[in-house]
Image (cartoon, rainbow, N blue to C red; front, side, top):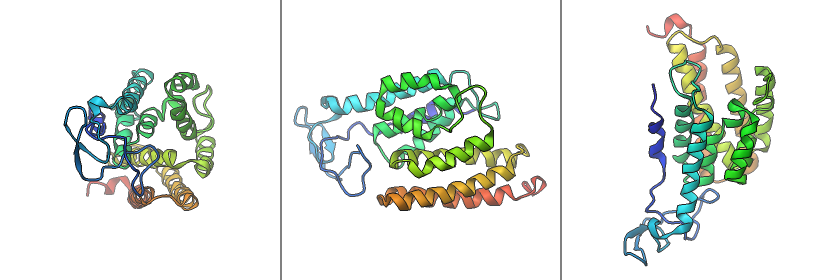
Amino acid sequence: MADWNDGLRHVPDRGHNVEHSKGPGVWPGETWAAGKLLPCTVCGKPVLGFGTLCFDHNPEQQARYALIDAARSLARKAHAGQTRRNGDDFYTAHVARVAQEVNHHTNDPVTIAAAYLHDVPEDCGLQWRDEIGKLNPEVLSIVDALTEPGAGVSPKASWEVRKTGYLASIATMDERALLISMCDKIITGYDFINEWRRGEGDRKERTHRFYQQLATAYASRCKELAVNSKLNIVLAYFQTFNEWLQSEAQRESHEVYQ
C-alpha cells in the first residue's frame, strides 16, 4: 500500500526565492533559479536565484507554499477513507503521486495545489467546490477545468458521457490544467497496466481507445497554445507512455508473465 507521505517530498526547495526576473520558458508564477548563490540581505543565508531574501525572511514565499500545505490537508480531508480501484491504495496516495509528477515540471504553488485537489469535486462531490474556492479561487478554476462533466453528482453520468465531455474540455484547458491532466493520466495509466499484468481489469478496449483520443486532444491543444518547451516535453512523455499502454492493452493476459 502506498504511503501518503510518499507524495510529500515534492515540496520545492524553500531556499529558493520568488523575487526575480523571469527566465525563458517558465510557468505562470514559477520561480527561476539562475544557478547563482546570493546572500540573504537579512541573515546572510545563501539563496539560489536573483532575489536576496531566503525563505525564512520572505513572507510572500511563505504564503505561496502555505497554499500547498492547505491544499494537501483539504485533499486528505475530502478523500478520507477512499481507496483506488484495486482497494489497496488510499486515494490520497494517487493525488500525491500526481502532485509529485506535476512538480517535476513546475514549482508554481497554485498548480501544485490544484494537482492535489484535482479529483475532489469529481470523486467526493461538487459541494467541495466551496471549500476549494475559499482556499484559492485560481485553484478552483483549474480544478473545475479538470472535473469530468457529469461527475460529482448522483447519479453519476455514464463512463462514455463523462469521457466524451472530458475530451471536449481539453480544447479549452490552459497550460496549468493541461499539465495536471497529462500527469494525472500518466499516473492512472500505470495503474491500468499494473492491473492488466496481474490479470485484473476488464476495461482494456475502452481504456486504450480513450488514451488514443487523449493523445490526439493533447497534441492539438499544445499546438494551439504554442507554449514553452516544458509543456511539449510532458506531451512527448505522454505520447511515449501511450504507445506502451497501447501495446500492453493489446496483449492477452496469459502472455503477460511469459
